Image (cartoon, one colour):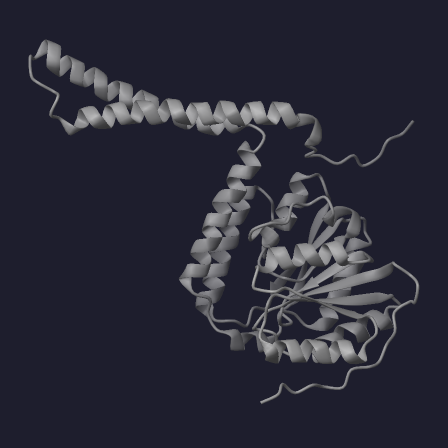
Length: 328
């Protein structure tokens, strides 16, 4: 059964011009709803606001059905490009490729289905024109399941506590970037949802705009616990990179000291047992544990020192800040 295609207005982008007001980067996976309808709704909104735009559909190794839907839009709209990945790489990689190929001054990102009402996108542009570098969508009036809302609320609460950045919906795929900002952000693994947090750390101005959630999203059901488990691991990575990426010895050194100290206490106790109480200790598993903890502790501290040496060697190539203005 072929996917149903709605009529798409035939439009042309500026010929011979390598710059648009907006590049709309759409992540495409097997959950794609209707590419033609998404294009028509967003394109109509952007055209009414007088913005020149292009669409980039990032096909993350989908099957023939989804491929047909996206290519049908490309066939009738001149300002649409499709970048197809040979296999599934994940959202972060696909978006990174899209950012690289985008030609717009602003970059608007969308997921495989419209999470919010298209009319809400105008709020994003209004906010970024106030001087912000990145605007994150915050879905309000949630219509998905109560369990999903509870999981999301707990997850975002943890993100706020770990990152110390006041965001309420890091999982919202609706984001608006200035091109100058997105080029400075590290996009890899599954950290796409954390780009607003990373932007704050880099010194960019980040805002959050409440947007109404679409009721159609309810058909996608409840996300499994495994997804949130993987996101928790991503959160650990976020915490580590935020606090220790430029100070590895503080983490590995502290861990090494704790392990080394624990091993020393155990072995000191065993020495007391052997020499003060005259009991044999060679057959005690505690001896192996104490020795192992001391060895691992020294290795952990050594890893921290090696990390410091690497940072020292490449410190001139690392820039974790932004300069807003220079007055001369």
